[in-house]
Length: 515
Ligand code: NAD
Image 1: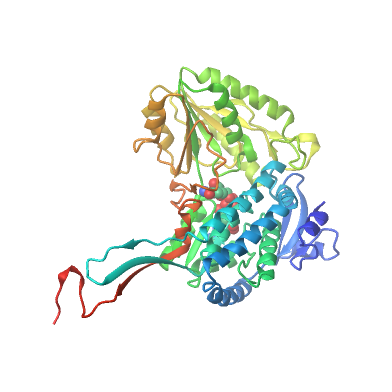
Image 2: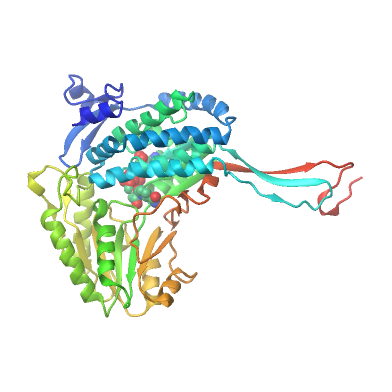
């Protein structure tokens, strides 16, 4: 199947990719100059992909500097036309690229294709944006002076992406950055290099055809050799990094040392509050999708459920029923249309899941459903059962404060809304949050300055599944970055304040006279 997908995507015979049927595969798989990409649904290798070293990285940046010097002078509306054509090509290739995401990242078909749709959506958004990179004008205090702000591109934007959104996060960053006049240098996760190659090839092919080669360079390498070189590189003024808080702290430290800019999209530990007035059927559906979708491997996955004590038993009963049907028959090969829950990305993630379940038990938690490795149809992949764990009556469950990248939902009871909000806000991360309530007072309290401390706060919608039109990102250890819609484009540009004097004789601000 992979051969056909690579062919559809125009990547068959790509010089970096060696397939298992190739005589060179065995040697490549043993070499430190290659990474082997595996299908998490089966545990079998998909391909060996050659790695860049620091010298190759440096050559790529040298070339990118030259590309940037001409791209920055192309008008923004013309840049918008390039992005429009790129979006159209992703639209055309949504199915095969979505299936490649399914094969390499283990996402179910709808979610693999949904990622490609996000690239299409952000391209549509960016075409309009290409005529709206507005600067303000402001009145000058000096006669015959005019004052305004204008926005210029930054240069080379370094984009570091996580395994769980191997295509869309590149799109959010690179499409906007391109319209803003930048070249984006992409360092993908080594768990998803095939999706990275295919994604980059699509964009590069279109841009090259329109006369703009080299706008979307790709470097695939280890964190120690290529990642560290990139974040320390002063030729890369902005590093936009998506991944764990651990990685973000390292990136922020190194880039901060050189006073570069960062845009950080890091871990989440997202909660849903359910108050007594909530529609429990709606809540059940939304929480189930947000907690088990993508096998709990979204930054916005619901990990904590904080329920008013009066409706806790009823809601938990509905959730357990929903989980029972999923665990009985809907875990499996993500490339099958009936599957709802695919595999975790690798054995390390399974170990993390089992560790969290065991720790929760030791800390007084009760497993209500799940908690075990799953073996659907004898598939060799890394599957686990979506799990609900009831916290002890004290609500003291330290493991719930950590982001375990797996489908585990911890349930807490509350009496008073402010107590629920405090519990929600008590973790280090601040990405996404939600309340289910039909009470205007409760919803508005949750949305007020005394409410959720997260970058995303939803009412009667789960924590995951954001639209590209809004600014996406979170507070505290989630990193503070904003990507995608609204005015996130400003992160990829530098602001210049301009004052123009068209009168006679020097006039100084603040009425100062000099000489
Ligand atoms: P990870 O931190 O292990 O890796 C993320 C990326 O950082 C990879 O490309 C990795 O190679 C790179 N990296 C790691 N150390 C580096 C270094 N020293 N220098 C340069 N690059 C380095 O994360 P992961 O396991 O791939 O992804 C899961 C994590 O990502 C979760 O914590 C999840 O919440 C987070 N995430 C956040 C968002 C968001 O928008 N907030 C979106 C997706 C994923």
